[in-house]
Length: 101
Image 1 (spheres, one colour):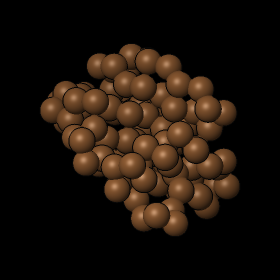
Image 2: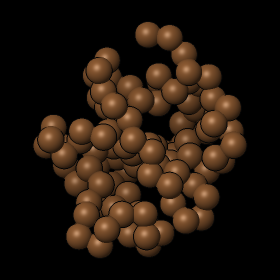
Image 3: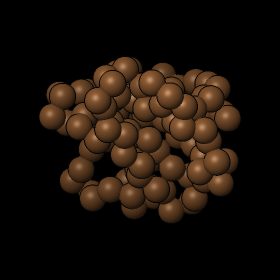
């Protein structure tokens, strides 16, 4: 499936994701114990972020934070940190294979 990768340096690009494990690896810096969090936007799209990104001192992702604020997906004083994947099809996301480590 396709996703949009929003990096902390402000760049974005469309990428192909095959499994949940692959997506989690991207947002969790390939930490095998990383926990991915899903942030649902009010337009039906969703972000996948590193649940522990703030404790890992990841940089603020200004683009993802702005999008999340626009869609009232996070508190006004909150920020999204680290690289983020945007999935535009919730149904396709839910059907994505888990994959194996």
